[in-house]
Image (cartoon, rainbow, N blue to C red):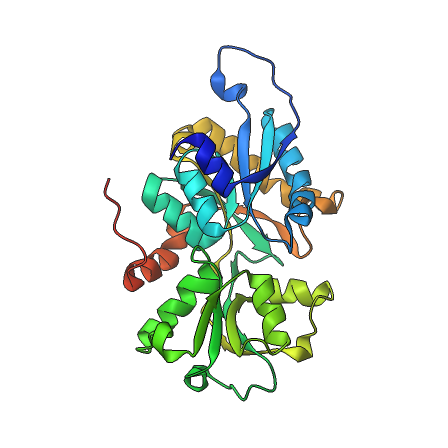
Length: 296
């Protein structure tokens, strides 16, 4: 896919952050870095506002112009990173595994949530549904996240597969939508159940978007690695740049007391990681047939 068409389909909201370097003989110190961020917040405008301070921090620490880009699906962000249209991405684990598999993108760091590098996928229902377990879902409506989502798609599909459940025949209706929409539609009783992740539910409750008592968690996954900061295959070969990026991200945690706006609430920094941290996600992708062994 050509650069223009890919950007039109998968990216929006370009916002240049800082211009610190002067032109010299080294292209890597003068070309802007394209920083792609998934749609973690309820809307694009809030997402841009939330991650602009982090983009500015990276620009200052790396002495490079950083262009912040919100991509509204995990699948779209994975494709953008794989195609080389995004240099650095803050993305969900499954999206990262897809980008790694397709084009050699490499994880350099994992975000920390309340000091932990992991989270859990969940399934939720409304209190009046009568659903107590996955066994109660037959013939009910169910919502997945988009097909690039770890907790909203890959992990629940893997769980259903292990139980011999085909979602297309087991449920009366299946939809694919955004995490925030799953929570709100379940709370309203418009859906019987859906897949989400604990961080999103916690954030929506804290922001007053939903009430804890209006939905109930009936299934929880094993721990999953948090969102990855990944770089394109081209940047991954630049060991000096990767070291600088890791150092910049690792320093965020120590700055949060002074600059709490660097990360959303409850996020506490980054820890260095690599591709091995996401092995469980890759295994689930292979087991479900959603991931093919790389051709390279």
